[in-house]
Length: 330
Image (spheres, helix red, strand yellow):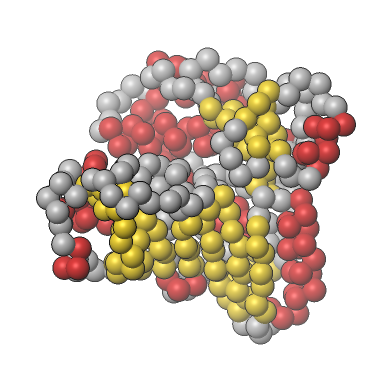
């Protein structure tokens, strides 16, 4: 099952390009945004990894420290085919000496102590530096500058990126297997659930893009306060709500499907998925329909373009790129 070509908002991509020619072409730096306590039972490790899977690295850290893999914390999965820098927390019950850590593809950059395990989604943002490679790209300089200005002003649709659905969208088959009643290991069950919710959210967002309301607050929407997990229900859309939405202080949301979710066409189109979510008592959630892209920068050359930008937690750089270029993996 292939992924749909979900609707864009900033017209057609400007040019074709190659991404991830080398790991250095996709550079990600995590900003955690918390103040360490300086004591406690967890070592926090800031690690640069190259062409390395986050979950695999977490298991190596657990083995080195003599703890269970489930006790190692990280805020989010970072791209494998990239150079990334992110934090991990590891219990210091066995007082590991991290100066001896020697793991292929990983370099320890900083170390701190904190009182709590690092939880998923705890980081503040990710900073990206992405190289797009092609021929005679400088000819697109004016159009690219105009496109980036529009993205800066209007934002982009907050789609889940293709990596959420696995290589060749293979996680969709896993979702079907789970929904049909097959028993799966815990981590695959979790993956199936997140795949279903992500796909259904993207379908709802796609319909709002086609309707021209992806960046507008509608009566009955739930609003998300920019840069936070705070949400509130919107009754009538008054001038103040419209102003805050146009200034991207708040964003409209759509549901992340769960037990009892109704009212959207994709939910009716996938009754087996919805029944499985209900049987598993998956708690419904929300996600912003619009993504604010911060700190946009560009370095233009004849045969490559370097884009820099920052995104909040849970956002996908590939959703930014697909509004600009055509490339494999978008």
